[in-house]
Image (cartoon, rainbow over all chains, first blue to last red; front, top):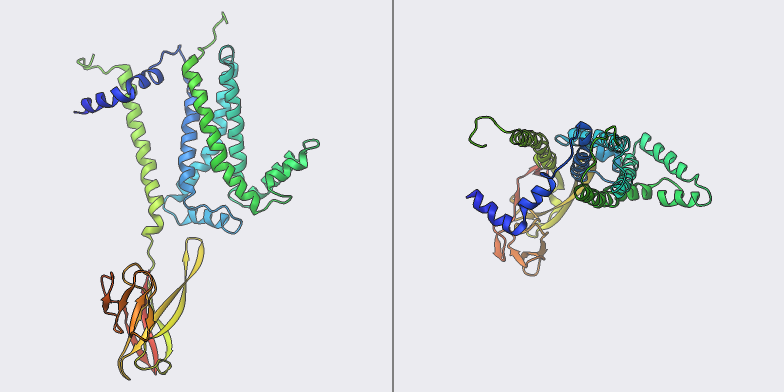
Length: 219
Length: 161
């Protein structure tokens, strides 16, 4: 019965072909360092899911941001767990994505024909850092406030256009409710959409071009 | 291959991934459900007697609206809800206090003195002065508050989550 259902679906969706080209594809002999990409993808999905759950209670306004997080941590069942995973997962994701980049660099896996995979990977790293930067403000505590003050101030040191960039980031001259809402929007809509899209392109190329093996003495 | 008692390396990996994935799904999934349901499972019940002032404030024979507010903490915010009750003194000694919440879909009813009935503006339901349904969709009469008179003052028993 189950077989029949699968055959029916497979005939229409090509499930077996998808499985064969994604999970059963031929790869060179690899080691554990080659799992860092999958780990990054897993962390992206985990951050996405815990983040979606947090938006049930979190409110991005100066009046309620801090209190709503206190509520999540102290009142909501397993709120501490969901937020804890999101909090620590964020740091872990930056760390793992960075390790993934180091592995690609040291194994020279960015060379022809995989330059585009590398370039999209660089964008993914930068967007991941952007996620960290925008997410850091959302708790609206002293650390978040001053970290964002300093961070946007650094962006303001760019010659000529610095003060404009600073104003765009803050949504005005001061760190305010406008800063919080735009950081929130960028954190939960703009950057995740960009991340998901580019991860798709990145994975397409990983599958299309295959992955580079461990370089040997000949290389 | 499947006939041999020894499991293949590939099947072993698939099995381990399935089992570990299942465990992770349960460890995350159950807290996630609790996380979503938490506020719905926390029910705080009020149980107070609310003073409506001296009974003589209310005319005999005509239902009179009395409004009051109650504040409650929902999550991180204190919100104020307003409530209305109709005090209907049928005689000098007999008093009925009715909720103004329509039993159909919770719109607020008004007293129409000309027709001697409560009218719900949402779906044209009507109730008589005792709260019994005259016409319209409500499934039951208007809710009655338990009331008492102490030293000439009227009180109602307020029970609400």
